Length: 463
Image 1 (tube, rainbow, N blue to C red):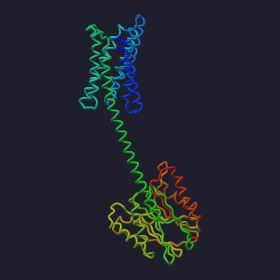
Image 2 (tube, rainbow, N blue to C red):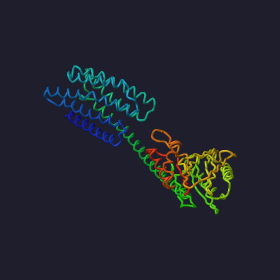
Image 3 (cartoon, helix red, strand yellow):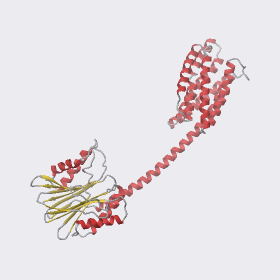
Image 4 (tube, rainbow, N blue to C red):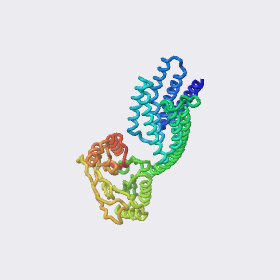
């Protein structure tokens, strides 16, 4: 009767804790130790049930059957308990594990064939399991790994009770207090110690998850705040830039820009004097983001306050001195100014791409290159001006370097040659149509690849 009670108690205990640890694994699959321990407890429950069943049956053939079943499940207990030890103590599964596992399965199979005679062979590998476990525990305790001591205590008690069974099976001792199966008591202490350690791990893991969730929420709030600020900065910046303007004394003008980040580093603007002189500006600040946006704001202020009749070179020198006085270090501004009056174009460039001029009579593209350092880069630079006559039907394209340096999905740049071909395809149309075509061409070239730089166009057509 005592054996029956022990069978019920230990089997139920193992199954209950096995189900518990399996659900803990399902809740957090990163803790594989819960899975290995639940599988160990499942096979342990089967072993303990059939082990006790052999002493409860009355017919010899049934007893032999239950012994064979017990031997069949027996090898999996030490296999999964070793996997649990490696996982719980964060140890890489060594080669000897596979040797021990193969030996357990082979000797277990032999024990099924001859349960009594061959049982001694599987016990040899049980000893190997204890030696391997002792090696891992000793190393873990020496390295002061968490939970190593409490798990070691549980396994030590299991070893003591299992040693009692082995000595009894080998005939060295007789049952004490009529206890024929001592190892279930050892497993009881093992289950308690391991469950305590896994509960601690589970609690800490949950706390880490909670902490991560709190940090994630704080990051989301911070990202939302930054996104709002960037969007506000973007709206302010866009409000400073002009839209396409109606025809001015035979000129059809259009501007547009696409930014690589929320706040762009490109700039465009225009002004008209009382005598009808049109000044077009296009620029590109170093980098992207808020720093570049700050530089754009400064250039906007300087452009607004400069006299319309001021010489372009004088304006460049004044702006360059102002930037250097602000001590922005590696933050500079490339800028191009173009003045158009009485069908003549006067321009100078401080580090901007060439002007592309479409001549309607010859249906050809002229590339007007002007060398010049970005504003603020040096104390003084000898900027040069060019002067070109314009005729009806001619189209002028000013652009930032984001267009010719645009990458496709094969890491190829659009380059100056393709830019001229694209411009020539549509240069006879209105300025608005030209800008639309250029952006459409950029989308087709990128093929979904993100912009790595701002793209800005200023188009002026002589009507």
